[in-house]
Length: 222
Image (cartoon, rainbow, N blue to C red):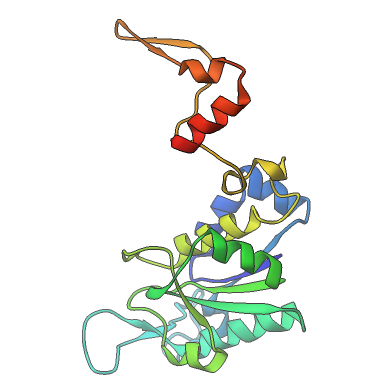
């Protein structure tokens, strides 16, 4: 699986991917993640030219008025075209994050892992990305929950994490996925008796019984 992340702040996503399971998956080439910064696909204005480090603007005021700024279509389009070129003729999906989009869940993650080889994730900022980008590329509106975030980087990380675990070899033990077995919301480990401020907290007896049928029933109830 190849993820293509279009973001103004690639370091935000990269920091999450550089540790633990996903870092190992990237190292072992189970997944790959490429970044495309829209600022790399825009030009300096006349007033900016000649400066040592010009601020490459990619946003502008929204039509119709209102607060905030909207990311312009052109640099996002160029970034998407670059990602599609890198993906080649493979099965590619483009995702446009939006609070009003289709709800992301484990079923969506499983389907995506089986159906596609490349996923392009557009991370919006400010008031969002010019909606014409979505129309041009027939991108899918997707939401990770009924709330608003400051940018699309966190939703992108959620998708990369959730979809990656559906790819065999990413997790140390593929059968350890909680979504594929009966898993309780409560888990326990050593010590058997935990003492805290004069009180003792014990592991449920059924988990110490060795009776796997009863343990599965307990987990199912939980």
